[in-house]
Length: 304
Image 1 (cartoon, rainbow, N blue to C red):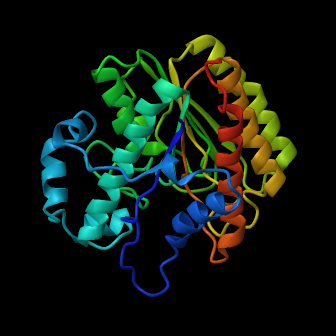
Image 2 (image 1 turned 90 degrees about the vertical axis):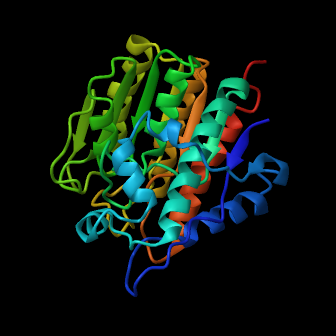
């Protein structure tokens, strides 16, 4: 049975005017249940993970300070969240969810985190609303445990996965692919194994043409054992932080292309949410819902 990670640990007390859309997580779960796309027994609440697993990805000295809420004011400004206990619980829960989804995907074909995609977290610091890098933690665990030998990360958030790129810069067993808006955050990009920089205000046709040009080759040449898909919906025209002009249908076609490619190659797939920033939750929740709906449909009979 395909499992989906969901936790109530996500809300962080934020100052007035902060734009992080915590409400979208609960609304997405409710939308998936309302449409009868998932059953209650498919949802699981992730448990917190051991420091030893986190140390495979992040500096032990840095993580010790982070857990003690002792990183310093400048570090929290860079992260973009206040120094509160909820930041630790949210980050641990999200990372644990992606790790357990990855293990589940190896068994049944797919695993999905109704959160995650914290790709701006580096080895020894966080930034861009990210403290721990959930995909990197899960990927390093699979490698360490001998559960996978070659891992492909497809990051289609509108922002480059700079932390993920830096963490795996010298790791040949992990291929990092990031297709993002050239003129958007982070303004100092890191080097992924393959970066496709899309100009600001690009629309469906241009974006999808770029995606279809590069994605098939990744599956054929790298030959991964498992695929992590970071499906940020901040590529939408309506997104307040995105700078791209994809329609809802364009975003859906993007998801279908990536998910279908993984399914055609009979590869386990892990889906995480990534970004989506809008004071009106409807567009981003509907777009996230499309992502998970497609993954559930394509992987319903995996292995049969």
